[in-house]
Image (tube, rainbow, N blue to C red; front, side, top):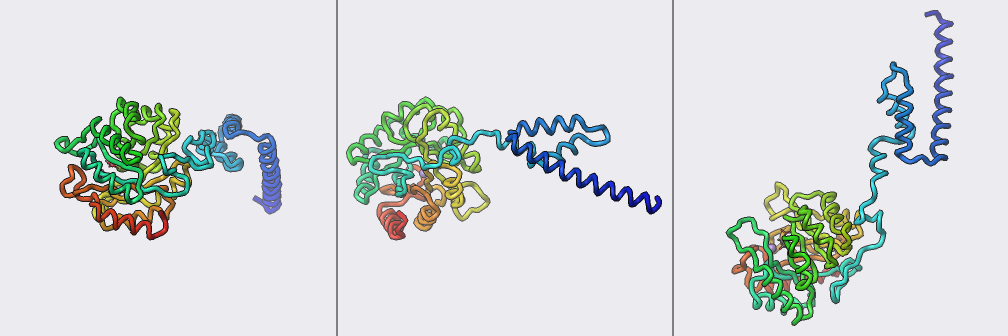
Length: 346
Ligand code: PEP
Ligand code: MN
């Protein structure tokens, strides 16, 4: 190639590149002025790819103009996906759930306590008396217990809910109890104030749908190995059916760590608060499984922005029919509660 021809080609390359730059800028301006939606831009890219001659790969043309217009198939999909009803994008202001004297999500954190399982009227009554005297008004207690082994205590069922109702009426408390069967969701509303959906049932979609059909508030536990995205989608199942009164509760996830029963994911709290308008609580009993670290973990949860803490309390943990190793007796609960309150976070 002689010197002259090279110079001509170099000049041509410069000119063509300048023209291309100007055309690209013009293209961006027009697209912006037209306010093309992501899918319209995608359509434009497809048409351009169709016009290219066979020397140019269609994917290359789509990618080239896609980069110029800042559009990829993923961004089209993301932009066209509707925000979840449980997301902050859909609703800016916090959802607040009225539970008698307390408002969960209203800025004042709440303490939820009670036995792992409802074992008898007298047992629940004793716990309620101690809690109420301490100023705790939300009482938990499982009547349907999802146990790992079928040979272990399965709970008192509806009779357990009746006990909760009776004791709550006597002490003026609100009650939370787990429901495991969709057919019990409506009935539960007659006995308890909040339906708990347990970790093992976080993705029991028929149960979630049933919980969405009633107006009883729901406390949804994070699944044993659920991502936060899965957790929020589980909540979406309930809210999308019409029940907007949903609270989320982090209860520890399964990891390789054996020092605690599960691994308390504190980062879930600020992330869920950022992503969602629903109240977020932390269960320090099932996450840690260790009595001596429940207070610091409760404080960490509140410092991270949790709307409440849940802890299990039993009159005689050693004789408990479930979770004997990690329920606090009355004295330990007193110390726990005082330490958390001393932090000024509750
Ligand atoms: C419970 O809160 O009683 C319970 C069974 O917890 P989880 O579903 O988190 O294991
Ligand atoms: Mn328990």
